[in-house]
Image (cartoon, rainbow, N blue to C red; front, side):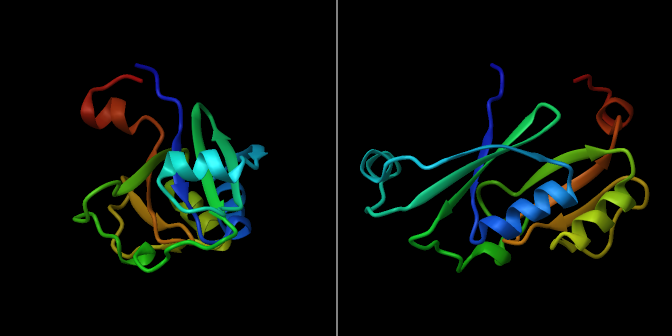
Length: 147
């Protein structure tokens, strides 16, 4: 089954857009402003939502950012760990993981301590989601996989 996109809620649309575009090389595709009532019912939330949905793209990966002007629950954003149930991280391949981590930090991300030299670096986006940066070709070399 082909993948379509990955969606996530952000607390600051401008900061998240800056991080993913300037820091990790995504491009903005489009913004949507769906109507409150059907979307609130679909998501199991109470209206009003005042939702902006921003689609970003990098290579063949599409990231969907949800920003609720009516507010988000940011209480657990930065406390997620690899042991937390649910989505633990996104992984992106880059030509130079050290340079990519530096760009991510300059665009509002946080580089996590203890990288695996030459193999992997973890950064956190402005809301605390972990992004694993791997060198291009990692899966083919280390895991014997193909795209």
